Length: 118
Length: 112
Image 1 (tube, rainbow over the protein chains, first blue to last red):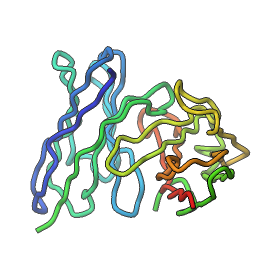
Image 2 (image 1 turned 135 degrees about the vertical axis):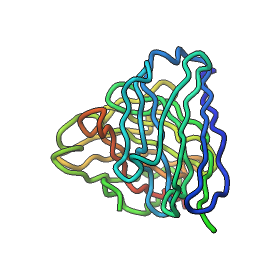
Image 3 (image 1 turned 180 degrees about the horizontal axis):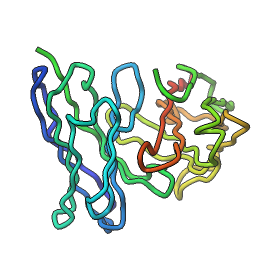
Image 4 (image 1 turned 135 degrees about the horizontal axis):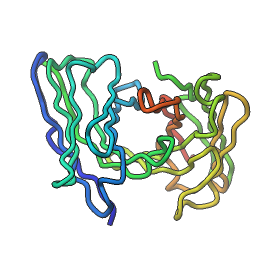
């Protein structure tokens, strides 16, 4: 079964850090770019970051660039999102997803909730 | 504010048809035939329902159809069923891996 399972969310104070993980199974992980998407309260879905198959190319939403780092471990078929200097506006459910060509996302995890609050 | 504009809500009775719009710009929806639609039941993983404007992944009922005209795409759900009640999001390819995809704000579909 093709599956993505996120973990690592939680409650963190402003300025704090969290590391999200996404375990992939059921498909050839190294065949795909991977992506993080978040759903913020009242704002719908938003692309956060994406990473190439070999991990050597990645891109970020302007508001998270310099604070978030996307990475992957192909040996462990896992995707990560290191989030530093967290802000209240980063509060969201974070999903990892697998993009088809032209970024239709055909596999999603169930999401992990990040709450940034004092 | 989301990049693509969707109505916040839509509704219909069982058996009826309902259409949900998704309006973008000439840089996203209007530029590419790469609009997707997702069904999301809260607490579950979003599910791809339509890709490349009108294609259905395997297993998606043909009651779900997609179309596009200019900068506006539409998802039509025909023969509404109770299990269709969910949030629906559209997305569009945005041109490159540097900023690859934009989403709509979502539409809550209620089956009356």
